[in-house]
Image (tube, rainbow, N blue to C red; front, side, top):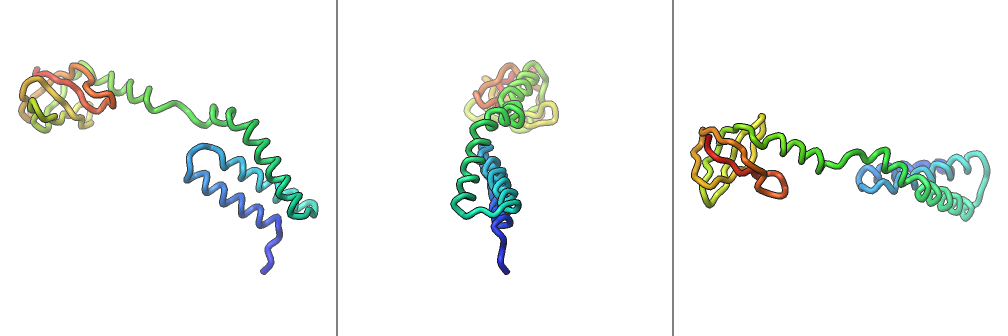
Length: 149
């Protein structure tokens, strides 16, 4: 079975598309488009391999340098940090239940708003007690400072 050059370029484009899904960066999608442009051109006109590679390089790099920044603005979305900060801040001042005892040397665990979080305190707090969330203790937002109610 002999594959036409347009089919080969199309399949190479599919491979780039699959690779784009696996590798973050939004770069390989433009090489996918370049392959598909070459597939269309070679399907319509008969070009030698050197011309096909030239069309691929020119179209891929032109698309990459002209559309990547614009496409990232559209598809990237909001960063996770601002969402996490909002969720963390919304828990400060709330009452929680201790699910694992909190000691002076070892963080415990609390349950607030249906989620489990690490917690530290200046006094020992037993499992089952209610606590008030005072502040966020760690930079990653996963540990809270609590005090007994």
